[in-house]
Length: 544
Image (cartoon, rainbow, N blue to C red; front, side, top):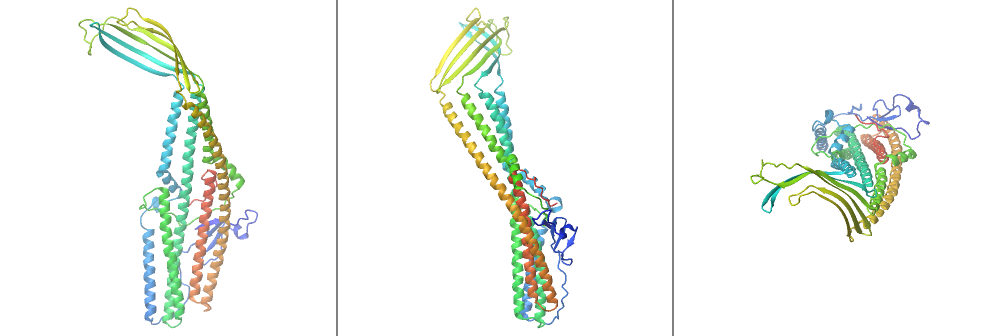
């Protein structure tokens, strides 16, 4: 069953046949019917007899050969179609739903897997940035021995060293904030990739459904045309029909076979496109329902553009990029500010002469001296100025005695350093951050314009598809009526069989145009959803 939205007139101008629960336009062929606000196109599953009777006589050799050739080709085509339809068992009893295809595509899409890993990497970098704001600590344990003045000595140290940033001009804080923004960017980039993937899967899915429906129609058309051509041959054998009518009918049969071959090729290409979108092996069997069902929804451009500006991943990414580079500017400025750090160490240590019989190798031994506390504490200040860094440090220390001294050591050390032109990179980084920030602003303006255009085109194409669906519906109605009229005339011997075949071919072409219009409705609505960044904001009737 293939259904599409009704006319664009909306709820205010609804025709009487739409209001009726079910109104079939042609009860015998059931070409087009309406149910609620849905328009339904029924593809016949088989062709019945048309009631015509012909006198069968002896076939001339040329007619017999032509009939056998057509019959052989039609049989071969039917076998090929059977192979294509029953080549294997797919998902859910052989049929994939749209959700199945999207889930498989998401699971197999390598860029999405990379985006997931990028999100995890951004989380790790955020943790690292937060950790840099806390004190750093090092645990150190040492055991050593040696000789001095031919005497052996031993020593042990166990210390805890640490350093705490006091003031870095906000560099550590801005780095953490930048990492938080980077995490949000990677998450939205994942959504962007998924958004594009879903649209490509929907296009492939609906195109395959259209191809299957068209193939089924062309198969039925080809069988019916072959039946009528066979009747024409029989009439010619009986001397009722002219050779010109036979040639006309066989020519039309060739056109029907051509359309069938084209439909088979379209089906194979559409299946390959869907498999590629799902990123599965081309040898795997994928099958979907050939019937499309579409329920019209109202799409307002003004509302859609507002939703797009809020939800479109590209908009979020570019807005976040401005914050990202703004923090980069602050980081580059912070690097030009003074840096103040506290550093220190506290632990236990000893060093003494060992007895003559002391064995320094494990398990070894120990002597009587006890571990004593030793520590140091200091302040370190770095001041950058035009690419040159000046450093000042003040340290107070207390060390335990060593074997070369008899008492511990207490000291206070003050130190100045000038590192000439060691930090020129900070100046270029500041300039680069300004350029990146301005580029991000310009890119946000561009992406806003692109999204506005994309939403506008999506809404326009959707409305155009609805009009095309309505027009195609009317053409199917007209051609179905014309076919019935030609059949009636043929029954009254006022028309020839070639006229019936011609009308059947035209009806099949109009049905295909209607299938195409329905497919365009689905795809254009999916494009609108992609343009606003929410894949199911405007619900699309899913094939189940």
